[in-house]
Amino acid sequence: MWNDPDPTEDRSGRAAALAAFDRSLDRARQARTISDTALAPGPAVHRDHRGAAPTTLLFDLGGVRLDLQIHPRGDHHSLSGLVGGEFDHVDVHVRRSGSTLRLFVGVDGRFEAHDLAPGPLSLAVEIPGRPLAVTDWFTVSTATGDR
Amino acid sequence: MSVPATTGPERAPRSDAELVLSACHGDADAWEAIVDRHLGMVNRIARSYGLPRQDHEDAVQTVWLRLNQNLPRLHSPHLLAAWLSRAAHTACGRQRQHRRRLLPVDPLTLAEHLHHPTDPEHEYLLKERHAELHRAIGELTDPVDRRVARHYLDDSPDARPISHRTTPNQRRHLLRQLRRSLRATREPNERRA
Image (cartoon, rainbow over all chains, first blue to last red; front, side):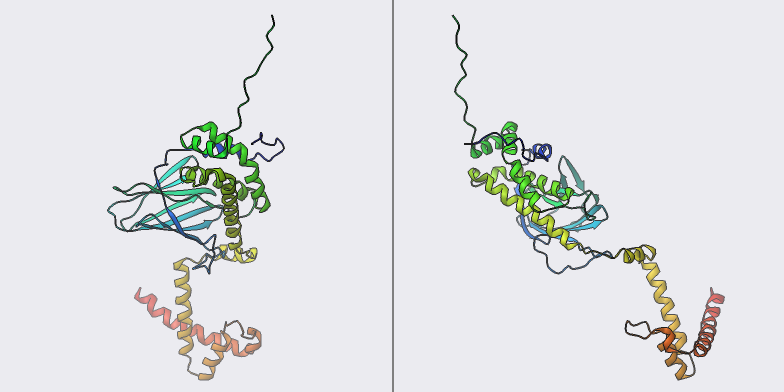
């Protein structure tokens, strides 16, 4: 039996939680996360001059691989990635809560995004003739501590 | 005749499994009920990680975005609380790991980087100057002078302080010779240019 929520409970984040409701991508295929260095950190491949290593993520979209690197740039982040696999054309979209940004993908499958504010993001990959694939949501966090 | 006010039978709150099913069919009220029922638990877990405010908010929002995305794929909707608990721990753990990967840096080192940006042109000119200096040393006729000059310019971490390596007279003599050699190289180049 469920009771009403305790009025003394912390209700912060309710508006953001309600805004997360969206059924438009229920038919999309969920990409499998193969690796995420933020969860299982190994030795960093390289670091920038301030000692920060990029977070690297690898997704399997069913025969197509998606490599991502997220670099902290002060309060913002840049993202670079590579879609690898057999296809003629691919579209990549960065999904933020409440907005979507389409990225330019080069003929070699590389793409970049700059000035990404901290917060949750996910990528949607669209290849003609295949179902739309979406990655799990992950967070790019502020690199400069509390704000 | 007055009729006593009656209320219909109170509706039992819907179970998590029912709410998940309704939310999957686009029922926003069911989603709101899920949020209201479990928001406190998710916030409690996030708080226990002691994350900075922004990271805390981002992690909590990520949990709800993930639930929304995975709603149609939940194998056991009646175990929603357990799913949310695990998702909250994963999102907060990721934030904490990410924070650990950022190395604290001495602000003085940072200032040094700001004043000496390592752009390719700067690096190239530095290398060129270095090469030119070593060529000038190689042209010193006296092998003792060559050895002393290299000893003087030794910038390896374990080298003794410059003031202990040579006498003032040796340094004056060396610098005179090196300047002469460098001038001799530059002048024909400048004339050619």
